[in-house]
Length: 306
Length: 270
Image (cartoon, rainbow over all chains, first blue to last red; front, side, top):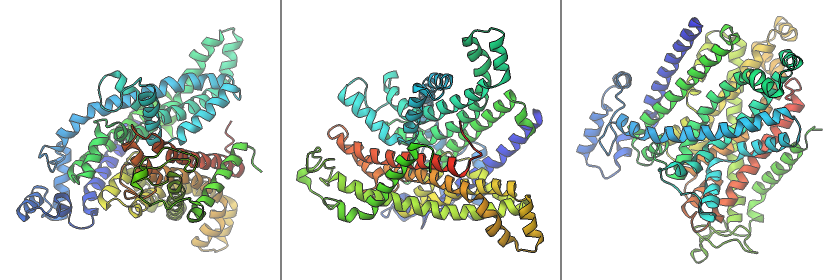
């Protein structure tokens, strides 16, 4: 197990290094002079020169790269163009809202996926299974920038049950969480169903039933626990879907999270902020994936050996 | 031919989608760009079944033209990124060694960016336009193809018929193209079908965020973004473009499932 973790950590360091490199070079993909684009055509030459030297764009590429990497390692992600605050400060300010939305979406997804996945596996090809299969097809195909507006039209405008936009109490969190969590619920419920169905065919389940264990106990204690193992990996991967889906969901609901910050950065051509947001989102994703992989290897020793 | 009736439903929708895209200029009731401020946000009625948008343009006409954007972006991205991915995957899986090592590490790095994040980043620096959306989606789209093809090549390259072809003195290129590729192409086609759905969603997502089609273009994603601005006064603007995206994505997913059952009987998913 230790050697598996060390191997994965080495890969993590390599991948993060690659991510930082790619994010650094992003600003050099800009067609034309990035300073002109960031400050606009009417900026004073002195201001341009100042920004150029603050960002180090007047130095050789390799030096810039070295400075960027050592900056990132010490938590310095640069300075936001217009507010003059540090990028890290602006990101940390928005992180709680994003975390709240992620937890909300995850909760919705699990609350939907578990009951439907389990019930569908208990009666495969039954009415409920077919219905949940169809619903999950819809859930995957429905873009969240359509689901969000539909929920607003129905629950906020027609029924006037829930508030639109803005972060606030729990009732403000409901619609964004459903918008973001639906696709994950759809994937997860199918995954739970097929995984549980596979486990239910195993001999030890027949054994548990044969010794007279109540069906409820067979399912919850013997089958579900084993069925959850492959589901863990899917949850890890789905967090990536949530992270990038959150950018759109935050745009729909004017949710003041990391995704909105990234978009504000893009619209205002505030490239240091854009770089910082992308770096932070990718890092969260990579670390979450590492944690799920290690958890997976921990509960299923077969994984470590391959 | 297919076991599942949903596959046929998917095929019919796709056929309808393609015909719509090809014939939009002849079947659209109005010019999709025509601005008619007097009729701004007019709700659906008998003549204009989907109503009018912020500019007073006929939503049905815009939807029909939007099909062209989705189709062109989807096909060009999947074709080009598919070819790049297949070639890289063939070379990587066939030769192994350092070529494989480097390529797979690049893949690891690209996969560290969840979902659309890197596409958003690329379009952010290149500037918002449909062409740049296509470039960004190609830049990322080859990854799943390369991984898939690499894995398949590794699993078939030690088989006897491949070894026979190699010992008979055929060139590596010939072995890859004539002997390996035809044996793995069916899984690639299945992947491409699912990818088409993914690319259509990605293009609409980027256009929704204002990073794709310029304002006024009848891209389905951009139409939803306009709909969001007037959601309180005219919810009808938001309904139809989303419905179109969902149906087309659903259709490609159904057909992908059907093709997988048909072409790849080994992965019999119960």
